[in-house]
Length: 113
Image 1 (cartoon, rainbow, N blue to C red):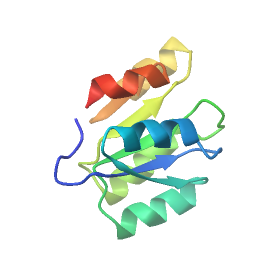
Image 2 (cartoon, one colour; image 1 turned 90 degrees about the vertical axis):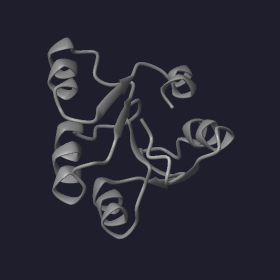
Image 3 (tube, rainbow, N blue to C red; image 1 turned 135 degrees about the vertical axis):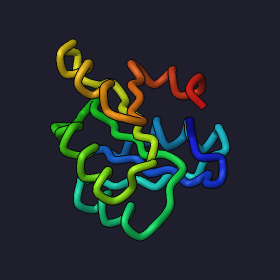
C-alpha cells in the first residue's frame, strides 16, 4: 500500500498525534505532521510522500474534501483514514474513492503496510 520509494509519510491531524507518528517511526517511516488542511496540501504540493494519513479521531476535518483536494495535486497518493466516521454511509462513500483505505483503530497501522 505505501509507496516503497518513499519512507516519508504525512499525517494531517488536529492534535500532535504523537501516538500515530511514534508507531509509523517504529515501522521505519519518517512522519511529518500538519495540523490544518491548507498546511498539509501545501506540503503535498512541494514534497513526495509514500502515504498520507488523515487522523479523524479528534478532528472535524472533512475527509472527502481533503481527498478531493489531494487528488487535484497527486492522483496516485495512498490516503489512509484513521478512525473514520462511524456512519456507514460515509464510510461507503469514502471507500469508493480510489486508493483510500480505512483503519478502524491505531492497532491496525502495523497490518496495512
